[in-house]
Image 1 (tube, one colour):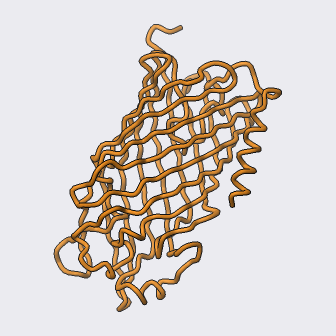
Image 2 (tube, rainbow, N blue to C red):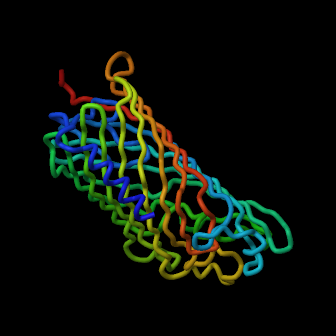
Image 3 (spheres, one colour):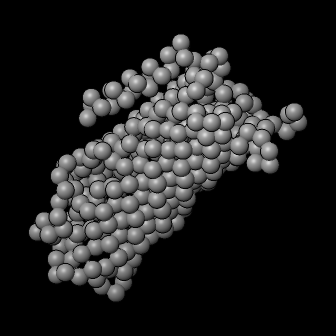
Length: 342
C-alpha cells in the first residue's frame, strides 16, 4: 500500500514539472479548485469572498477487525449487541473572505443526520438516530507562495464544541432514552486545533495538489473523554477536459487515534463494540474520483458544481468496527469579486 501511495504522489509531482507548467496559477479554470471533497484548498485576492455548500453521504456496512471482515455472529459472540450499518449525511455551509491578499478567512458550519442499525444476541433488530449542528470551525489561510505556476498556503484553524455529545435515543434496554455510543454523537465536545499545509500546481492542461491536515483535540469534554487525534494526507491530479469541465483522481490516507478516557454512561463495555473507547481508531486509504464544472461567464458566471465518489482500497480498523463502503460528496461554490472591481 505504501508503494501505491508513493507512486501516486510521484506521478502527481511529475505532472507539475516546470516543462509543463504555465506562467501563472489561476482559479479561473475548471481545475482551478481542488476536488469538492478537499477543504480549504485555495486562497482569494483581497476583497473576494466565496459561498459554498456541500452534501456528503457516507455509507458504512458490516464490521471489520484489523484488515479482516467480521461476521455479525462473530461480533455477537463477544458482545450483546452488534452494529450492522450506519448511513451518515452531512450538509456543510461555508464562507471564505479575504481581508488581504495574504490572508483568507474560512468558516464552516456542518449539519449532521445519522442512524445505526443493530442486532442483539437474541436476534432482535433496532435502529437509533441522531442529528444536529456539528462542530463549527473558523480558519485563516495564510499564503506562503502566491505567484507563479505553483502556490502554497498554511491553514491555522480551530473548531468549537457546538456539536452535541449527549445525544440519546430509545433502545431495547428500556423505555427511557439512553446515551448513544461514540459514533452516534454529533460533536467532539472539545475545542480542536485544525492545521493544514497545501501545495498547488498547474500546467496548461492539468493541475495537481498536495495537502496534509490534522484534527488535534484539546482538553477533555463534559463526558470525561477526548477523541483521538486524526491525521490525513491527500494528493490529487486533475485534467482540464474542456473550457468548463475537469476530471480528477486523488488518494486520501487517514489515521484516526483511539479515544482517551471513557464516558461513564457506558457502564457495561461488553454491551457493544461502539461503546469501547479502544475500538475507535484505525487507518483508511481511499481513492476519490471527481468532476468539476466551472461557469466562467454568462448568467452563471462564478458558479462551480463538483462531485466526488470515494471508495476505500485499504482499511485497518481497531475493531470490530463498522467499515466504510463509499462516500459521495456533491457541492456548489460561488465566488464574488470585490465591490467596485471591473
